[in-house]
Figure 1 (spheres, helix red, strand yellow):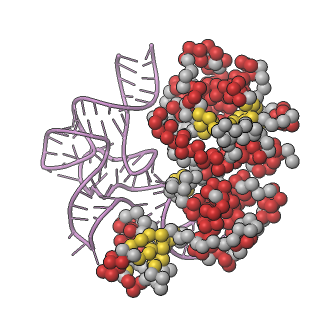
Figure 2 (cartoon, chains in turn green, purple):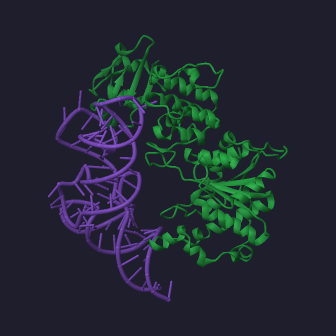
Figure 3 (cartoon, chains in turn purple, blue):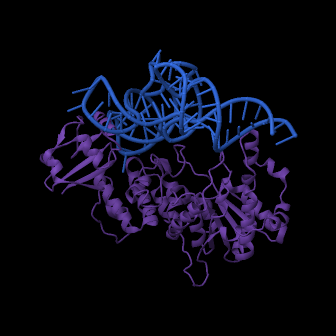
Amino acid sequence: MHILEELRIRGFIKDVTDEDGLRARMDQGPITFYCGFDPTNRSLTAGNLVAIMLQAFLQRAGHRPLVILGGGTSLIGDPSGKQSTRKVLTPEQIRSNLESQRPQFGRFLELRELGSEAGHAGELIDNASWLGELNYISFLRDVACHFSVNEMLTAETYARRLRDQQHLSFVEFNYRLVQAYDFLHLHREWDCELQVGGSDQWGNCVAGTELIRKTTGARAWVLTAPLLTTAAGTKMGKTEKGAVWLDAEQTSTFDYFQYWMNCDDRDVTRFLRMFTFLSLAEIAALDGLEDLDVYRAKAILAWHATALCHGEDAADSALATSMLLFDLERLFRWEQVVPVGRVPVAADIPQAEIPRAQLESGLPLFKLFVESGLAGSGKQAKNLAAQGGAYVNGEARRDPFAVVGLGDLREDQTLLLRAGKKKYCLVRCS
RNA sequence: GGGGGGAUGCCCGAGCGGUCAAUGGGAGCGGACUGUAAAUCCGCCGGCGUACGCCUACGGAGGUUCGAAUCCUCCUCCCCCCA
């Protein structure tokens, strides 16, 4: 199957410029393509996965990815799709974010080792390296002259801002030129012929192909992915506590696993196609599972997505913990979820320690929930208990002031606390 | 340069001298229903105190007042319109 066809089936294609031409070009041999990312946080989020996986699939088809970290462009701020001006980051923040995002890409893409042969291994490049030394006058003369303000003003991105009388700074207005210039630069220096990205980037990407054509006469292509929303209509990769981060410090591997496990029923196969490398045939076999059986598909999705991001061991552990806490044995067996050969591991429930002395004198329930981290404040813990969401060893305790003491310890000297349906904490007594 | 409008809790957004920890919506959280889903319904939703209460909070600094998110002054930032 042609990679373009596969990408379409997997749901990665919203628009392509000159698809036939691109297909013909790809048939002649590997192509170098790029996708830009803004280092606006120290970690990428699940929302970035669409673009990352799109790159990963292309790479697996033999093409070479260039990951452009917008160290230069994020000094500006892209107005695309935004209702208002974005706050601008300091160079220090950007540099630090950039460094911590770097290894995250390595989990999904095969990146070139320093000093090794290029091949189809990807490169990670900071566009600050060329934008930083850009000369304003020559930029105006060589690049800006190819852009028509009249035309840009009709672009949805800018037109809307004007129509709504929203502020649009000149800097933002220039974003498109700068991004187009990136493409031109990559075309010249790296033979980059294709840019991929989210569909909100369409205009900026196309501007790049036009700039390339005007200045070099060469052809270049754009492929954009749809902006993903969940079946429930929320933005992909966002959830209760905000974004789902790829960094285990910000979103634990267990929570990451749970994010996928908790996806909407209607999204399971779609997500399997986009966020795992399972073959289309394997995924097709999981399509149409009904009722409780969808959990098996969700677990497979969660395991593979977690394995990609955090490694197979982390995925095993998260699966084992989920199976224990949510009693999933009744729904499927371990071997039905993980790849052949991976053996079950011990569950790893979030833990907290509490000094034995505190339990000896007895600790009010709400304090216990605060100390274990299951509640953000005493007030919240009390509300939690009052509403019947505070459990000790599986039993709901409604009185926030009732004392929990040594007598509540289970045989293994632990307490299993639970807040609501999904949050657990194993408290050890030391 | 001139004129006008803003800055309120995670976000949006009311409030325009006391009854304001501050209406409403969204998000979030808990519960019921279920399947850790969706939809629906109910409750919670600054912090500390087991109560009366206290503390912190309406951009910042002062002031008027018995009393200010609400009035005045200055400052900072933002936006719109005309040049």
